[in-house]
Length: 271
Image 1 (cartoon, one colour):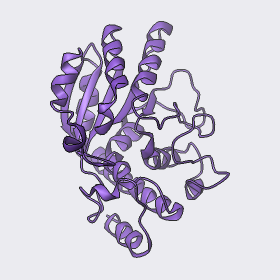
Image 2 (cartoon, rainbow, N blue to C red):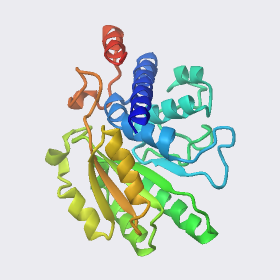
Image 3 (cartoon, rainbow, N blue to C red):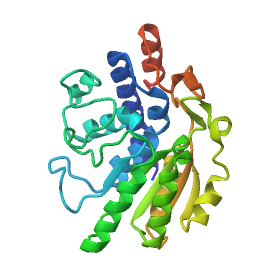
C-alpha cells in the first residue's frame, strides 16, 4: 500500500501541474475545484477503474462522470496521463478548434463518458449507466464526482432517490466537499448540511473521508463495492489544494493564474 500511495501522490502532483499549465496557457478556467478533486480523480484512474485507453468505448469498462464539469482540466489531465490522447494536446485547453473546451464533450474527447457543465445532471446520467449495466448483466462500476455547491440542485436528489429505488450497488458518488462555490462559502450561499445524513435518508450507504488521503479514498472504494446499495463518499477537500495562495480562497474558483503566479504554483507542486 505504501508504494501505491507514493505512486498516486506523485501522479496527483503531475496532474496538478498540468492543471496549472493548461489554465495559464488558456488564460481562463477553474483551478480551485480542479485542484481539490485531483486526488480523487487520480485514485480512480490510476488504481481503481478498469479502463482501456486504446479502446475508450470498451463495453466492459468502468465509467466516470464528472458532474462538476467546470473542473474539466483535472479530467483532461488524468485522461492524457492515462494515454487516451497525447499530453501535448493539453495546451489546447479552451482554444478554438481544440476538443478540450471549458466543459467536457463526450463527442470529441476520448474517455469522456458524459458531456457535463449544467450542474446537477451528472448523477442522473451516472445512474442511467449503472442501471444499464444491471439490465445488461455487466459487472462494470460507475463513479461520479459532484461538487458540494452542486448539491443545491434538486435534480441531484431526484437521481439519488432513483438510484436507491433501483438498488444501484454498482454506483459510487464522490462529493468534493471543499466548502466553496462561485459566489462564496457554500454554507452562506445555501447550506447543504447535514450532508451525510441527507444521503442516508435517501437510502445510500455513506462514507466520510479526507479527500486528500489516498488510503482513505481507496478504502472507501473497496467498502462501496460490498455495500449492497449505492454509496456516497463525502470527501472533505481543500479548494485549490497544493498551491498555497489558492487554498481555501473562493476567488480562485474561476480565475486562471498568470505570470509569476504560474511559476510559483508550479514550483510548489514540484514535489
